[in-house]
Length: 509
Image (tube, rainbow, N blue to C red):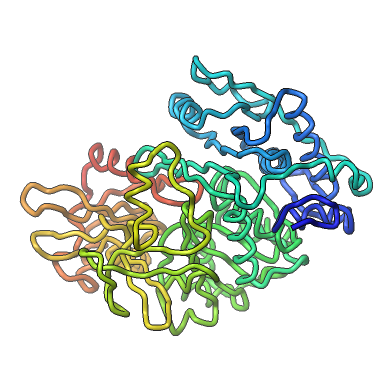
């Protein structure tokens, strides 16, 4: 689509170009002490375009982004797209060797980073060119149309991003996605949330994760604004930060909501806050009930997402929470989710099976992984590896990963259901249950918990309560007490680190 600026683009990029001309002083991004209007943000993105071109950039080049800061990352991302390049976000918390491996795999022509960042090693055979990006807030009117018309953005059907999965369970895979996939996901999510230009969402998910990018593009597509703060914020401090920034919504993981609502002993006035988005992990029903008690009037949207669809896939609106408790909602427009049996045949409504996804937001494939791509993109659609069911109305339930449903001595056990029961006791603020190998029983559930009151917490007391909730085969074989559950920036539990803790720690039963 050709916008009023004369540039052929679509979705959130088109909204940015138009808003920078028509509403140049409207706020788009607030991070720490910096505030960017649509005009100043676009001016900084244009500077990235010029910088790339002056250093030999060619349309279609891959550009790695290595930033912690929200403003630098999002400005660089948009600048690369306006120049016609492919964005390769890099997780800045990875060990140097792991980051170097990803750079080698993606083979970017450029690395955009902050002059304050530690040097990122590049493969010895790489011709990688490093360019420092230091955003500077600029004031002034909208960018001249002639300058905007010089952009040659990525076409909707072209590759726009190679997003490496968080790697919580293994080596990250490079998910290849088109611009129309990334921006289409954002537009549909904005529609589900009913966002307008008056909305402002608060996030502290790192910008280089799929969820961080999705939140930014979702608000941009609606003409709204985003507040980004580094580091997980919990409890009353998170509510205070949102109120101070005038936020109407929050986007984060279930761990955020748990730690906000659990300490509250009475309902609080939410101020401008009107909605809360939870995604990235299982949201306990007990937390949903607790939120409705202490944050009345705040609409809760439970979402299920995948990097392979550029962000969100299913949305459960507030109106359906009572009728469809524990569901992750219905797929976005244009997407379809179905459950299949082990033999590939379609499961009946309500029957458990592996979830498959079809639709126009699916990835192109995994970078340089034809075998993995073939295993994932099947004749039935994308094979998620998640187990669940779909009801007759198309609502989806996710009960866990394939390895979350396991047999203990011949009996089927659900790690997610055990986790729910542990959280429901009220004695812990966070919990994860994994299946570990056992010589006699095959697999056994092991619980990792963070006590609400470490001084008074006792594993025996927890197990006594669980016996009233769970059948014997579902009781944890071990309970590992931790000060904190290791999680990725998007809130998912890092299973590899939990397994290390299980090997190193003894049970306190």
